[in-house]
Length: 409
Image 1: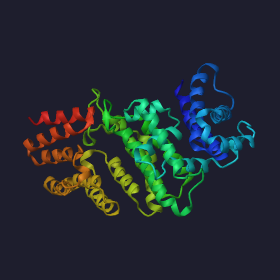
Image 2: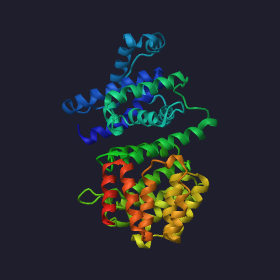
Image 3: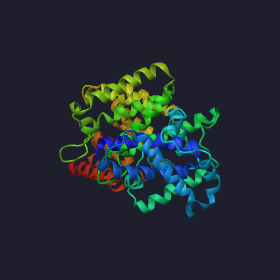
Image 4: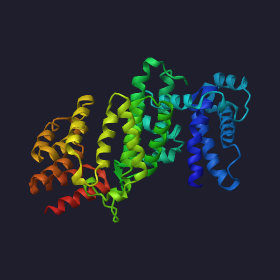
C-alpha cells in the first residue's frame, strides 16, 4: 500500500468512525467495525484500486461489519439496543457522513479517546487507533509491546469509557477547559514519544511525530481561538524542524548546540515561527505557548553561541511560575548555567534531588553531567554520564551518553 493511500485512510478513519458512532451509538462496536473496514481497504485497494468515493466505501463496509457484530454471540449483550437503531436507519453509503459537521465528530472523538476515566497510556493508544487509524499491531509497535498485549488494553479502555456512561456527544461547555487540557497533553505525549523514543533502537519515530502534528492541526482548525492548541502546534512544528539534524551519518545523537543548522527544515520553522508570533500577540500566554516561544528563540539563533540565553531563562522562569514541573526546572537549570555560570545551574538542579518523579529519570544525571563538564569537574561529569546511560532505555541515548563519558576519561 502506498504512503498516499495510508494517509488517505488515516484522514478518513475519524470521519467514518464519527459518523457511525453518532448514528448508531456503541462507540466500542463502531470503532471495531471501522478498524475492520480499514484492514479490508488496506488489503483490497492495492490491487482493486481506490474507489471513486473511498469514504462511502469505508462507511458501507464498516456498517456491514457492525451489523454482523450485532448478530454475533460476542454482541449478545448489546444486540437489543444496537439492532433497534440499525433496523430503524437503512444504510445509505456516504449519507451518514454528511449529516453532522465533521469538526464536531473529530472533537467529540478526541474527548472520547481522552476520557478522564482512562490512564494516559490508554488515552494515547486509543487516540492512535481511533483517530489515527493505526491498526492494533502498529499501536503495539509504538509502545514496544506485543499485539497480544495491546489488543486487550485497547478493549479495556473502551469498556471503561462505556462503564463511565460516556455517550457520543460533546461534553458540557463547563467541562471543556479540563477536558481540553487532557486532549492537549495526550497529543503532546504522542509527539514526544515520536521525537525522542523512550526505549528501543531508534531515537525517533517519524510516524508518531507526523500523526501528532496531523491531529493537532485538526484540533487547531476546529478551535482556532484556543491559544494553547495553537501554541502546542507551533511547539511541535518548531521542534520537528530540527529533526534531520539530530543524528549524524553514523546515527549518533547530535545535541542542539552541535547541530548543523542548515539541515533544519526552513519551511516547517517558518510556519511555526509565524504561528507562535501571531498566537503570543493575541492570547494570554500559556505553558505550550511559552515552550514554543523558547523553541522559537533557539530557531532564530544563527548559531549556538548567538542564542539569546537571557531571554530563554526569563521564559523558563515564567513557565515555571505558570506550570511548576521538574522537567521545566531541569531545562531552566541549563538556561541559568548559560547566563549565570554552571555552578548556578547545578544549585538549581540540587532542588530536584528529593523529587520522586525524577528519582530514576536519566535526564537529571545527564544534565548534571553536562553542567559539571562545563564547570571543569570531569571526574564527576564522567560518573554522571555513566549513571544517565544506565537509566535510559533508549539505545541511541545510551550510546551518546556512554561516548560522552569515554571522552572525559
